[in-house]
Length: 115
Image (tube, helix red, strand yellow):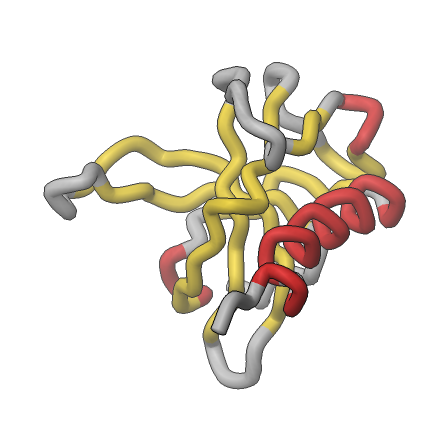
């Protein structure tokens, strides 16, 4: 499989909290690291009552789509080997990606550091 690009929405198996294999879920590629690693951001179709989630509609895609309105969860980042990715289902617009990047930056901003 070719390595997905930043902004791609991919599908991979997410483990349950006990680390057993769970369902296949979508995630957003937010960084392409050297080697075979990617930083991904969880996507869910369940509305979240938090200030972090970024809505994701069909109109936010420049290629492909998800089958229902969803939410990117910038507070749920993880690193995976590209071999874990089952397939790419689409790519979001630059503007929507910028919204997600802004949310991630707000979460990890240096002003949040408390010595």
